Amino acid sequence: MIKQAQVVILGSGCAGLTAAIYTARANLSPVVLEGREAGGQLMWTTTVENFPGFPEGVLGPDLIDNMRKQAQKFGADTRFEHADSVDFSKRPFVIKTSEAEYHADSVIIATGATARTLGLHSEMHFMGSGVSTCATCDGAFYKDKVVAIVGGGDSAAEEATFLTRFAKKVYLIHRRDRLRASKIMADRLLANPKVIPVWNTGVEDVFGEEAPHRHVKGVRIKNLETGEVSELAVDGLFLAIGHKPNTEVFGDQLKKTEGGFLLTRSAMAWRGTATDPGWSESYSNYSTATSLEGIFACGDVVDTHYRQAITAAGTGCAAALDCEKWLESVHNDERIA
Image (cartoon, rainbow, N blue to C red; front, top):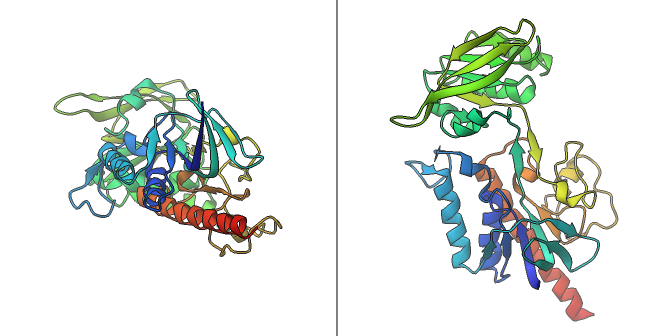
């Protein structure tokens, strides 16, 4: 079955659903393919306290559900389908799912990024209930508590430093005997009296209690040199071992960073690579346009720094506005021709 659409949005986190709200209100009748992980990373969280407009906080899944309903109210067609393949070689662009084939005049990519995890069943069991992949999002819940963070790069150093604002003790668990982070960041972190490094160590298990509510009580760790297994009593475990952008389906059709994140016009201009003659002169220096005309990207699939729900929503808005203006310019050109 082939279905025509002015806009197809890939992804249904804050970025994708915000783009859906804006394009739907612009009467572009967007089709939203929600993907295998509908709702994105907010579906892993409990209370979100830093999204504007919710002074008492809001559950992550509830925030996503409200965004979805708002997009549907304005005419967005949300579908629990996953893009199995895409062909961006010509317009209309072709997106195939197991259910249908979509021909789109434009595409907004909001497929997000997946936080790397340890691969433990127990960490997923406690995800959002003591295990977190975002210290900035959840650190405030651990005021005067003991936490552990896994990682050794710049992100781990930044997040561990952030956690010291709230936690009374931060165990830094790393598989090596030194951090991979830049020297200045590593020195600053290790000089903090709240930080206790646990070198040459991996996490074997996460354990806790189910009542009166699910929560973490500790982690089981293994010294990788001696093989000794021990336990650390902690109230929370943070993972800072990187993110993997969900861009495999696009292959080499779009320009990416070395890490696989999509490059937009603004990012390419900042990197000094936006010299492709195919770029439209109508765009300003800031744009969510990708390296292919008519395809836009937003949210964590392009964001290697902030990774917040509100910044994802902001770029989703920007992508929708860019897409709307681009479609208008294309239609005007067609009428003139």
